[in-house]
Length: 400
Image 1 (cartoon, helix red, strand yellow):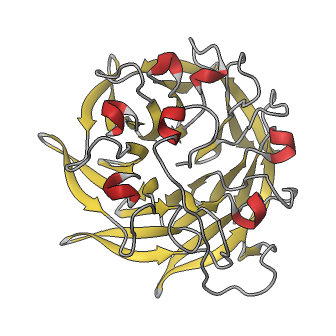
Image 2: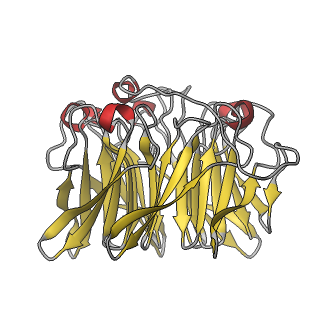
């Protein structure tokens, strides 16, 4: 999931107000040094066509040994954006494909704004396409990655942003549209059938209203979908859990942080793995926070509030979050003068504990936005730094 960026989709950016600050727990030492318990950088990725200004790394996702990275092309208004697929081989991570939508033609389409992958199926969004948005599904075939579907909501219209967020799990995918219905927002669920991908549900929160931006973030695991509404309740934010039932998708919970207040933007990022949900609140006091929720016999309960070990000032910790099993990764792209950090947390017998603090091997002292996007699959993490190298951008792979 990802924070807002300064180019494109101005209708969304104008609605939100960010307040930034910083917090602490326990690693002392040099705050710029990577604190890593077993984590090491395994690769630095860049797209084959990524030049200065392309912002490669605006979005990332990973499934097994395959990663996908989106680019932003901030300074190329007449060039269509791209997404790049990388696979791990015996000799390292290699680019396997360069993707673009079959009908995307310009940077204003925002192809690559959000990406997701599950097995051999990837989803890439273009929320600016035709001023309404699209989602593109790609499948790995014997001859390479091929576009197999172009998605839109059954009721998307002009000034929507269908594709503001995307997520996929097996044969089910979810697409957020944070601008739908005067910014109230919607999320759409699609299922793969014998005749292609079909919309099976349109979700909204039980109390969402105009301007809430429901669909700011989406995540899916099996038959559970989580949707963030970062501006609900005067910007305090909420996240909603939906469960697939025999009679359709039903809201199962409405989540909020134990100490979130107005303008915290809880729900700006969400992630889920099994019965664990993580929700980011990048504008929370003291530099941002991420909240962990677990499903219990009596419903979804907050299990932890996470903060970076060296937070001090505007960090946007929680701007992006990802989870795989008992490992969480949280991005803080404004940490240390916009250099950026990513933090790894593991579930232990005594709760969720920070296990590593990551940075790129060559990220600059300021301005790279390392942590703008994060993804995790098993013991592999991918972190985007879209402003690295004169905004050409990079993505970094870490393994343990």
